[in-house]
Amino acid sequence: AQKRTINFGAGPAKLPEEVLLEVQKELVHYGTSGISVMELSHRSPDYSNINDQAQQAVRDILNVPSNYKVIFLQGGGTGLFAAVALNLMGRTGSADYIVTGSWSSKAAKEAAKYGKVNLVLPKTDKYAEIPPAASWKLSPEASYVYYCDNETVHGIEFPDIPDTKGVPLVADMSSNMMSRKFDITKFGVVFAGAQKNIGPSGVTLVIVREDLLGSPLPICPIIMDFTINAKDNSLHNTPPCFAIYVMWRVFEWIKRRGGVEAMEVAAKKKSSLLYNFIDSSNGFYTSTVKPACRSHMNVPFRVGGNGNGDDALESAFLKGAVANGMIQLKGHRLVGGIRASLYNAVTYEETETLVNYMKSFKDQNS
Ligand code: PMP
Image (cartoon, rainbow, N blue to C red):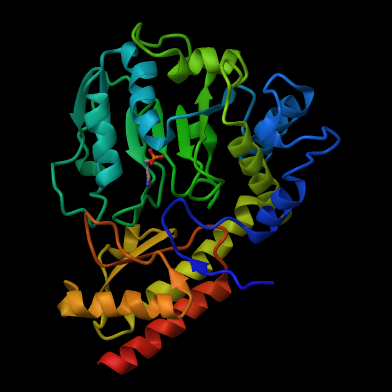
């Protein structure tokens, strides 16, 4: 078979080859339906089974208790920036945002259209750390506290779940969902656009605590309404059936591999390999993030330039990577440099291939 290119993209990102082959096998004739999942009615028993199994898999993998609803929405992570505010802001009219990178910053801007947004941290655009919790300005009257568990662009991941002193906690886990264990009962809402760690683009996984349902703002569009979509079992309107089906297959893959526990072990192993190599490169490669909050999923780094990145070296690095079968290593346009995303589907061997390439690139250029 043709060798696959190693994909370090931040999203849409690598999917497990096993899942792709499974989907390929069933693409034209799904089960006994005689047609493709893409052609199934969303009201058919076949699709209903996909929907139920996908939800159940989320419950199994993340140990979700029955007072939480699992829903599948559209609109991506960005859709949820609005949906969170539209569904929860009505509680008190204000919300706290812990802004630690570009995605939480965008979420705060979107929410400000629908209520008062308190910024818990001083404003910055140089995101490199999570300031100590003792310095956070949380307000007891906030409807919810929002944060991004893993900032995909800046490579910052929360080592611990923030303590909000009882105010409902909302987390964007778009880029680290199902990469590590977490206690869902500490959250009011978690959501993730699927296209990084859990599936193709087109579907957003939302898990919401039941007591937070029932008070959307009157202007909340139906397709973003958690209460209606939970009540209608993610079938209020036509869902992205095919994306949900592929996501379900990714969930089954995660279960076969040993669940989030196994994903967490693998993520630590892969990211340590890369960070340790960066840190021992005598400044040829530099990490842009303080060690305590370095992401296990997205590893931004610079090449040369005394830590600021040398444009010529970085473009030579990217070119050489492509020549060696590794793509999508360019850093986000906001920060430049290089970024390697090590999502669940990326293997240890692929990470080793990258590190070996980095070794030889360094030897040739220093
Ligand atoms: N949140 C995070 C953490 C992300 O990484 C992204 C996309 N890269 C988004 C939200 C926005 O997702 P979407 O493109 O699906 O709107």
